[in-house]
Length: 392
Image 1 (tube, rainbow, N blue to C red):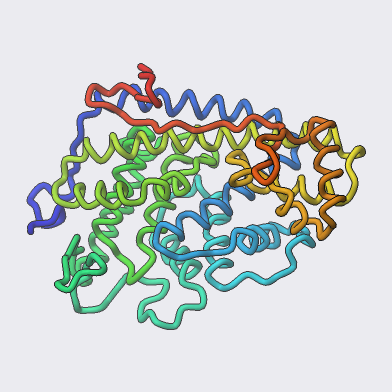
Image 2: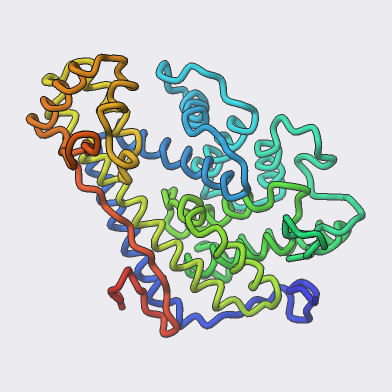
């Protein structure tokens, strides 16, 4: 197998820009719509949205790599690092949770700065906090053996990708950093937002400069590219959306590693990014609905009912999985069955919850519209397919 970096046109990537034009326009329009919606939030909610966005990306970008982190611990760590009190979650985050949270804050606050080696080394130190199994922390890999990605669960190793030898990494990364900065909005060769973010991700993953953590840093670089194109933190739930299509993501990256023509990859990445924007917009609209619901019923609910309501609201716009049962309510509030029955009936009467089913199949749902986010795909003609409707 000859990989992309072994081919004579490396790293001069090409793609059909005409098939991305409508997606690029849609990205900028959706970004403006999202920004306008965010402006309607109170400052406290805007801060909370930023924290939730950072913690969600931290957790989901780690989950893509098979690492499970506590969302509450990551969010608590982010709040503490931002100097915000967090009495609700006093537990201490693990080094991995603290480190990825710190990386997200650094990305969020310093998105506009040019990319350099020191930034990448800093991110790697954050990402590998607490690790003792790596020889190269906060620097590019130096081991002599090949850097390979091998599929798991096979008796015979199946090499899905092999990166350039370690000896080539410093020069390759000099070239990558120069390319990234030159293609920024202020650079000498600016690229549209989706193209730049998508190419930067493939380019970085192809070099695979670190001993570990390349996927998470590569996705952070894509987020940085999007934020620089918008001139503000993008709040785009890329990792959360990629996680839903993780197998597709790895297949698309693998296909892109075999040549330097990236139209197919950019179409896939562009669709994922547009869908991620819609997921973030659903989160913002949910926050607005949440604030209205709490304001309307804050004084009309007892402590048990408020505890259950807040627990349901923590699940976000996707809602409490399967709906809230009386058993769930009892577990959350530590109350009796008769009290739970009365409390839930009162919450339905007040319009806080809606009820479905009967007897043991009875479930309760928030009186907030759940906003399903449709799959978004860029078709062969550059049209944007959203569910069953084509935009373009």
